[in-house]
Amino acid sequence: MLGKLVFLFEKNKKSVLYKELNKNNVLDKYLEANNFKWKPGEITVVPYYDFEKEHFEEGFGFVVVGAVKENFAPEDIRALVAKAAKALKDKVETLEVERFSDSKDFIEPAFEGFYIGTYTFDKYKSQKESKNKLTHLDLIKPEQSKQVIFESPKIVKAVISGQNYTRDLVNTPPNEFIPESFIEEANKLKDNYGFELKVLKGEKLKEEGFIGIYSVGKGSKNPPAFIHLIYKGKNPKKRISLVGKGLTFDAGGLDIKPASYMRNMK
Image (cartoon, rainbow, N blue to C red; front, side, top):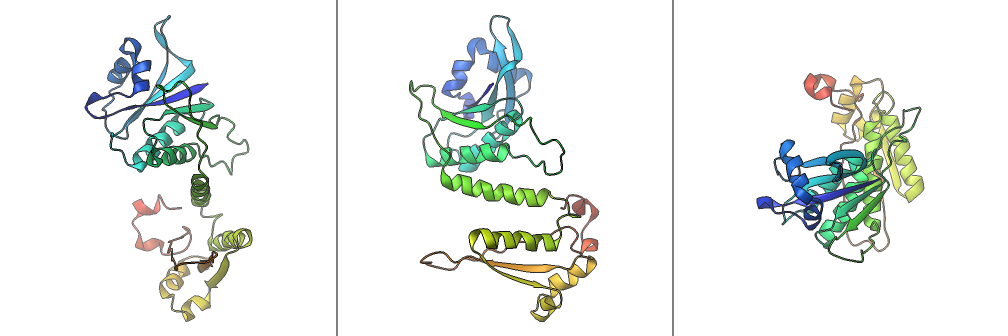
């Protein structure tokens, strides 16, 4: 089954594919009936319309209508495609996205959004997510008789692989993912990608002046750790430092946060 993502712009301007699918104004009427606001970033899912029977039929396909600015930012496309992919990932095998721009700022974010939207965390499910049917993305231009086939750029695959890896760690519950688990993951990165790894924990943190981490960590039975990963590429031009707050929930310091915030921490 197939899904299509078409676009609406400011001032009621409609994309080419929207106009093609809007026979007898069926899309316009559906959006109006479902209180579509035409706000940038908004989407709605429209079932396939059977013109002979004159009603919507969910068994044949879906159109996702997304509102976007013509002078879009990459994040606008990424977010809309992600929403469309998430909405249809258990319903269709292929998502066709109307390619109203050939710029890099459209192509790469479209693939990024696709992978973000089809992400599933099923580590603890005895029956894995077999419902996730959506595996293919096509970027189409309806006015072209011969479509150009776009492959996902390597940089996109690398970035999304890292993002989804991080999402897996974040989604792992804190009783399972403790500071020692972070160290295990850091060791995997070291072994797989050639990082250098330095780990400070226990009294060594205090000796090296990491008093905040050392003190807050006393609130947990799992001692805290400071993890330093170093990657040295070939012919480096400059040093880049990335500082991240990789906290697990059960790392102490709970009483200094309001309950409403603690509830959403992992």
